[in-house]
Length: 405
Image (cartoon, rainbow, N blue to C red; front, side, top):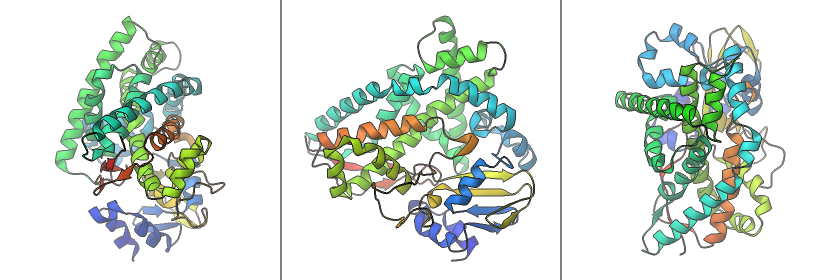
């Protein structure tokens, strides 16, 4: 398959549904290849990891977009993402990340374990209740979405009654992270961004009047404090980012992970019998079918990666899902093997923009899967799982299962 043909196939419904054969076809041309003028595609683990960590590359920020696509900021959704630490570089990114990381501490995440376990068991009870009807239950709607939404809402101090509202708007907003989208999707994303910003403006005001022990209060205090601080726009943008990123990727991890577990009943049985294996299983799920499949970087100057000259101002598409199945890094990469050693997946990125929520997503998977497997030893997929028509955020739209009541 030619390079241009392979890249094009990733933008088709079939290519998005199963991108892994296309990744292999691209990798056959080399770990980093030129796919067009000023456009490069990376499939090799080592080169993706190198580019993510290299200060000679940058994320697509507002300054870059001004030069590439004047008028891009007519989209409220694009502006919201661009103001967050996800899409900033240099001192602004360092300042924002330090302030957010100061609130999103390891202690705060570790303290969420009991909350995660309580919510996972409550949702398992609800699955059992639904199963009494004898009809299939949609795992995505009834567990994979509610669990991370409830957890991130608890972390941010968002009322439980607003959780479904957030799920709907996050689904609309995250489309702007895709490499291809329709006009109608942009309109829906802009409406979602406006509604989310209005919501958090109100929540910030309430937390100023009545501080709570939650992440929103901590970020408000970072905004209001002296010295380096978040601007008002940055505060709202990062709250929206934390909410959306805080459950979209974890939802996909839970859905993708359950499918692969139920298709390997012998491996599911081992995890059911031994919770201590959960960490390894979660890592292999992240590697095998990554909930985030790609990101990109732009070269600041003339550079060279993996022996390929990359001119300044070139875009490099980093196929994280391909790097996670690179045979030079992972033996027999298309096999799900939770016993494999020494391969940290690229699913949460690397370097300065490594995902702050990685520990929380891992915690939720490590807790949820043993709960599900113990509670439902005969849990099975019934019917046909339906993939979301997305490439960047890979997951299921619906996943019909039959829990044993």
